[in-house]
Amino acid sequence: MNEPLKKIGDAAEFLGTTTRTLRFYEEEGLITARRTIGGTRYYSTADLARLSAILHLVQAGIPLQLVKTLATTRAQCQTGADSSQRLHAVLNSLQTQLDTQITALTQLKADVAFAATTLQSCFDCANPPTRSGCPQCAINQLLTVSQLLNLIWEQEPDCD
Image (tube, rainbow, N blue to C red; front, side):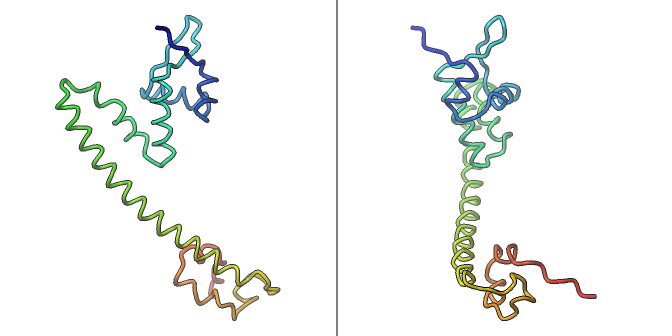
């Protein structure tokens, strides 16, 4: 049964990425495209599923080296037992990394919500948006509560 293959441009469009990205993943050994004599790359449904998984991991902030480890470990092993044990360790490490990221993102999300709500109190403020222009601003007292507000507010002037 001959399955339909997608040319690289069609595959990139289908996956929501660029042809350069697909070529890069091939250069990194994450995928092997079928090629015509003229060099045109073609991708099967299985290739597209593999590329989709790669893109999903990379877009989630997983380092490419870890993605490469996941993509290539089975082929480097002599037995299913060796493969599954190695990959299990990698996946456990990934789970720990994701838990850390989720905690950090949850805290950041709360800080963004706090900063956005806090800034609403300035919607009708006619003062200049500086510490000296609005020294009585209540937000000045909240800078110890929010890392994001510290970034948004201007730096204090240097002391001479």
